[in-house]
Length: 113
Image (cartoon, rainbow, N blue to C red; front, side, top):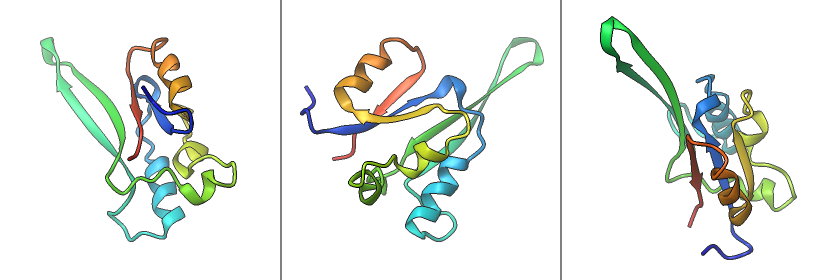
């Protein structure tokens, strides 16, 4: 069970468009060089029957993710959430985000330690 003060990041994969805005916003917020960041967007291509393909994007925090503590301490959202063009990321108390997960099939909850 999460502590009441724990905050996390809920990502809804169903609506990610693969724009990489979260990735760019994170790198810019922390002034990291190209290729380094707290979130990565992976492109997954699955071959389906009859020569068709399914493309999906999976944004996922890396070991560098601290959910923008300097921003969140000021009551602001992490850079990835603020700039997500698809609106598929939420920041908030873990207990509330866990409840949101039950409403959607393709989500992941990230809680940094």
